[in-house]
Length: 172
Image (cartoon, rainbow, N blue to C red; front, top):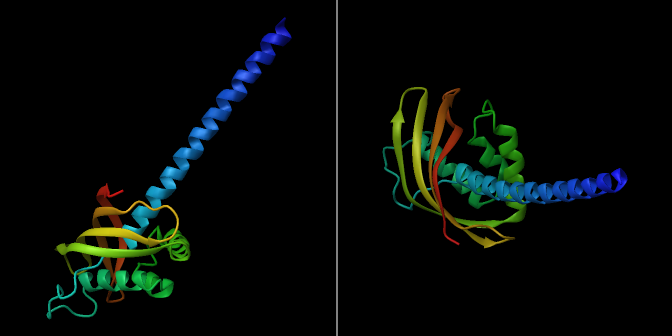
């Protein structure tokens, strides 16, 4: 009798483990999709043509963000990563995910606004309101994102050090 109880217990346990495993896999896929969306936002922020002011230099915080999105649009990994601070904790992961993103998707970026929130001689914060839509590739949730990029000046050049997603609205 105890063998039957143990067997039933084992089957229930295996079923629970299987259910838990399925749930964890679904959550991992959802997190991966969210990470890809966040990565797109972190790597690609742009401004509408004509929004740049003539007083901007080739290496001010806003221009670095613009350079970043141009590189993203062109799927140029080297130029994309040239806008990211190598000292950032996320540098290596960003490079790997950007390569995967470029290999997998063709995305269109539209920016509703870009503004410098704060700036010192060494750090800056740039807020972007951006819409990202899939042109081609597997399942992707088109989105509108509000993101703040933190930039640091390294060797006299501004680089994106980190980004904080304030809000994501999915469009599909």
